Image 1 (cartoon, helix red, strand yellow):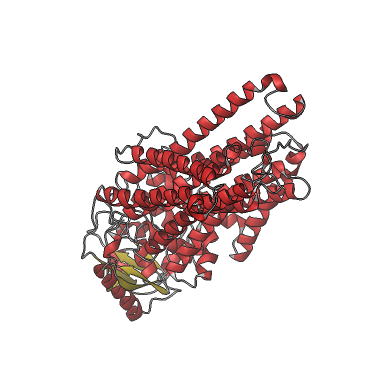
Image 2: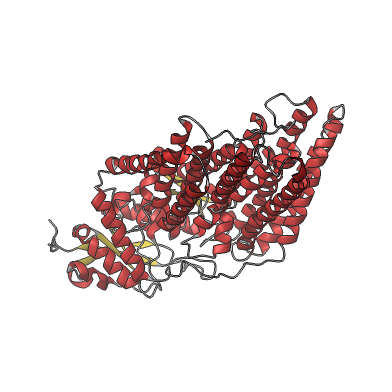
Length: 629
């Protein structure tokens, strides 16, 4: 591929800019750094609290025992098991590792894009300090994916990380020379495999985007596609060897999981027109914040040339004041509106919408400027052939980045608009890159606006977290995994009771427990046990019984020594009759041996029953299951 033409930018050149420009950049990075620290502080406060026994129980149980998940299309547990081992089973440390990984991957994507002239309008890569600071700020906006949701990494988290790795690898492969190009392709393969483990639906969209970029972006870089295949084979091979898992076994697990998903229902309508979320208290404050930040960043540039500290810090102090005021005023108002129910979905759309609108205005301005220059040598610098190649490269790679939110959202059962907003980091990165022609301080606007918005969103979400209660009531340390988590006094008592019951019955890391409550995978994790077939046999769907039969039919041999957790009166219970696929009957073959208090699938609309109890059953005698040794 021929070298990308580079034009001169006095504030981004490799040559040292005037001292005022360096000073302006440093001053503009101060409020961004403070906003990043505020986001991480609130994130840390949240990470110490709550444990959702439904979705989060599913996440951590999958990561704790991926080899026991033998019938699921979501194989993310294999990728996150090493993180849980690194955390030594401490749930809070595990959450932080997942958070750090998301920030690092999103920040790396930003670093790559801001160093790619083809995505910077043909200009040179940003100066290292400004580029690194902006990349960190943009990386933190990846935490939009966790707002109001459990802090533990999930299949959605892995999908986002895999998509960002693939996108960054593709940019490197298409724009770098020498050994960097195949290295970029290799990263594409690894990222694609991780995206597949997270969400196969997202991986399918991602594969289509990669193929489209391969067709659109010209150059010899396309010959390195073999390295992408090598990345997939290497990542898959390492996983299979590490877990002593045969390729045929993995295929059978995913195929059975797909059959169970189809039997379950409720996830069939992948392409749909969801209503656009709306909330009157979000859009106007967000727009006002964006305008104020842009104006103050320009003020930083102007005042940075003034002698003395006071004159130079006027714009910076203004940015800090605006950020603090916005967080202080917005958080309590949004919290009273129960952010998880109404504010968060629309706020996520607003973040993506601001990035999209800013990108559209930026591109329109750049096209207008290019048309004005048309009579002076064309829309782009360089010979006609080079201009066409440059345009195709820019368009192809921009398309890849713009498709990230769509790839992330595809396959979700929630609102597609807000799901895409959770991956708005990619749009923010594209907008930041297109602002390269603007004054250096203004380039920080996307990252600064998004991080400032993220702070009150996080604070407000603590009042109405996903399937949980106000996190401020989580004040008692309780055993979860090998460490402790702050829970409400009632939840802490339940966790302690589960730990005592596990000790009394001798339940340990080798014990299997089949959860038929339909809504409490986290109880199995609290008991320190292993799942059977799936980490969460989901109840409450019209096809829940049929899906459970598919799963247990595939994993029936694990029932030869498994305990069964039953709460037949629970609204989402899976009927014990599903044991019939293995020739077992609850009344005939099992006896009750203990009780475990738990919450019956808490949600924002249906609070959990405070005193629900599930009964543990053990086989009365050894059984022989056909086809099992």
